[in-house]
Image (cartoon, rainbow, N blue to C red; front, side, top):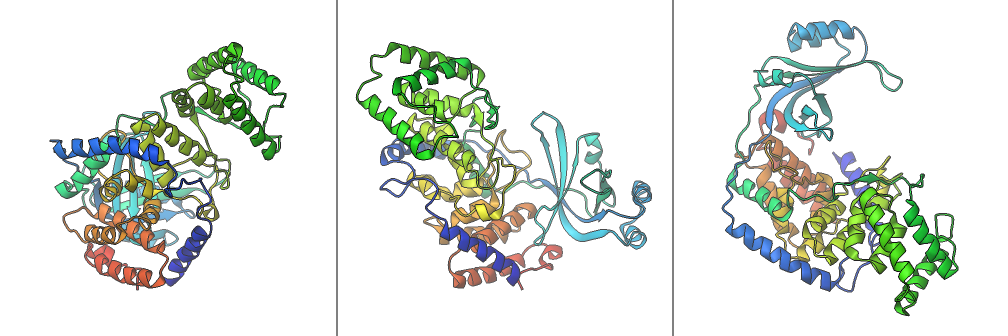
Length: 485
């Protein structure tokens, strides 16, 4: 445990050293101006009132869960092992016969059903405990009805053939119990409903016309090129593409802003026509980028600039590429300025949870990505219930319910004004026998990540003792694997 804690402390030290380097802040210490905060507070106030008078009483069910063993076999007589499993060999007999199996006993096995992005029905089985958080997973997309039958004393397995990257492999769960569900107590259901009230489950950050930005391929529409060429001709400046020095590029933007203030473009009808034509094309078929969107924001409308940004999905090329976060921040900022709450809150939460696609992402790059929880507090949001609501898991959530990133949320909560009160609430959740085991384990990891990100060694030590006490209230097969000794 000391080794694990040392790694997280090292990561935290890196985090501290790289703070305050991501987005510029206003005099209020936030990344949004007082004007924006005050405008959005009116919306939050009305949503809080709406929630208080809501008569919604939706019941949420826990995800199906049971106790089971996991094994993985990557060498030896794998085909024979599959036949034995299909003949429902006992787990003990399998363990004796296939001694090269990697085995993890008495895990909580959680079943989740959902639809993939291409609308394919999926059932996923995940094994977890207090040592291995959701490391063992098996997915199925065919004959899903077989998993509706009783499964106690039976196997769930997946076979992968050898390819150029991975060896032949058999992964399997052996179920010691039937899968079961329970209703989430009203105390927790209310938190989920609050998060859904703030984060409209029918709204999306993108606008339905999504194009993945590719910095290595030019897909600029002719109308956009025509507009940009005209701008460069007017300013006698070259196109500030990636080959131009950054100082020169931003001198260009300053020049354009000064030109705008001086009214150079005020009566330039060709400029307006070319820009409007280009905006119409890009809104319809894509092909926008940061460069063009800044012109749209300055000279066309912030609403159109927001819509253009919402058509693009920015994928990070590496750990150091902050393009996805910068893109999400601009969406949040423009959405706030145009009073589009639904887009704003999802974009801001994506920043908090760092929900972005990257081709690779090393831990060394995580430090400077801040969580911005204080902006939510400044808006008058009940941050405690919001964070809990997006941390709880249900089998029947509202469509598009927003889920948080447990590790990022743990870090965010260390910066919350009421962090000590939140500590108590999380420990109570872990210790609550009325809540399903899967959610209790999830909140165990939330508290663990919170503690790892505390700056005080003394506070970390005290919290680990308190967490150890909470662990003892979990089912004995999990509590016995205590990692906090």
